[in-house]
Length: 305
Image 1: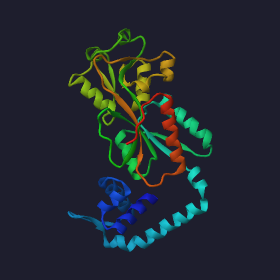
Image 2: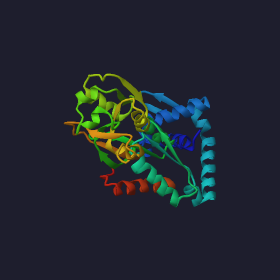
Image 3: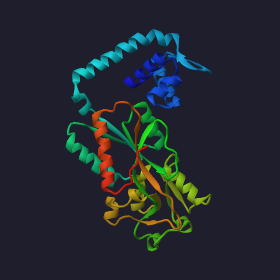
Image 4: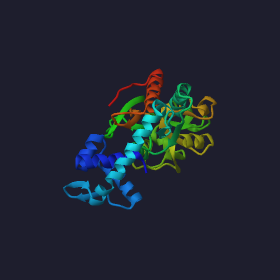
């Protein structure tokens, strides 16, 4: 059970409907409803009465409301007693699709640690949908996700574009593909392909790129880091954003290299996202700012939505 869940229930009660509560909390109604359902399953009580006209507090929910209010008041008293230190020394959780780990994520965490030596940073690799769900429910403070240029930005999130790049083919230097200045789709089909699993943006991109054609053999894996390791071990080639390969330790050591894809103008955007909220813990805000500064140093195009 998390305090955010109790705050959501209190908002539904105060505003009289799930829809109005979602608008005030700047959450999508499905995300708010799912969070409440998780709490209902944990408590074994239906807190909301769901009808076609909308969802309102159930009689059981109203009976439990005084207890919920007492818990929230106790949490507020604890925060006041702890003072600013509560906001500074908490853990910051970052969900990532493992993009730009070396040029951006690692330096940003290092910079943040220099300013917040007692604050833990938990970095969790996950798919984009999992990151969005955890951001909505309060499980992550920040999320690093890839978007293809033109993708819609999910409602309920504040999104900042950190980096933009292009898809490239990552291969070993001794691969036949490395002898070409660019790699065509026909070239790519001749090599075993290490593809990202369904749910990753690069899976969707490769599916569109191949247009129904199939490679000689394919693997599927989670995230860029495992993909690059499999390439380094000679299992095949993979397609990743250039900012996930350039400067990587394996690339610096000459174990992997990359080439652009012929006749392709697709842009991949690395986005930093967080849930829209009136107040943000100071530590999470500071790490957000560090990511933005680091991206600016890398020459990323920055714009907030």
